[in-house]
Length: 53
Image (cartoon, rainbow, N blue to C red; front, side, top):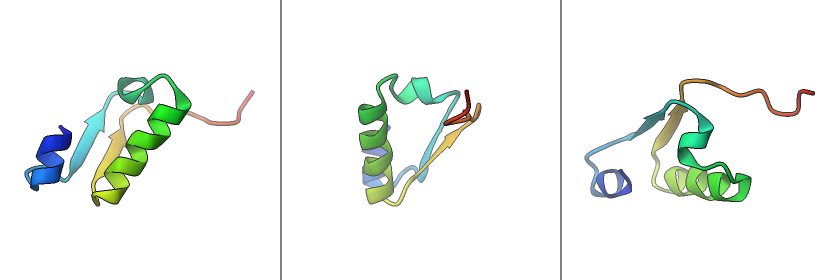
């Protein structure tokens, strides 16, 4: 998918959950940063509540 974004054939990605990208927070953050730096979006179908008990 990154190749498609980099080449201008895709504007972003839609994923079912954050775990589709990575289960590791730091890697997830790096991936989001990569998409942001290429002006692409990441849409997560199942949003997750952060910071809730």
